[in-house]
Image (cartoon, rainbow, N blue to C red):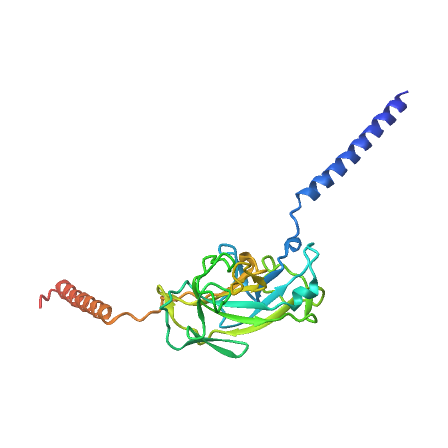
Length: 283
């Protein structure tokens, strides 16, 4: 009889262990955070070798020469026409940061993009993208200011190539990584050089902020008003930030040099006098 009881208890223990194992696995699966790749935006901006600033939610670099990448990832469960998205005209906005006033005019300041020189601010527009010939003021259909605009910006038009397809990456979680041959996303690269970029705002050297969007929207009330269609979320844009100034080796101003020289002379005289007192000589 005791064998029957033992067998029943043993069976119950095994069932309990099995139940706990299944329940534990289910809880573990539910507790695992979702893979970042499942939330990849349709448009993203990245910088090769860049890093992600979690405070401003921007991919940044301080290099003088770098490569900006525009990413297009169609789909996301929206049954979008991939070829229609690829065939659209897209725009890369390159904006002066920090925010500049409309009177900002640095001398001999420029940057290169794919070898073309863009003079700051002569070849830039002031306001909020997208650029519109007939609409002077910003409107709700424009790109959000997101702490960048209104400022001077340059707009570069381009198209994605259906042959330039790569493995999809969420640049927020994997910024600046090398491209991997595969499928899911399309990438266009732009070579940028800021060696000739100069000027400052509020004592801060200027940088460049990169936004990505298409201009497929048309305001129904005003056919001349171009609205932004798809755009890279502000957590998936990029920026060149000048390296912080190193003031540790600054040359003292002439007035400071004179003061330190005077103090040195006073100290020298005092030292000589003390030495004479100790030796019994008063003069």
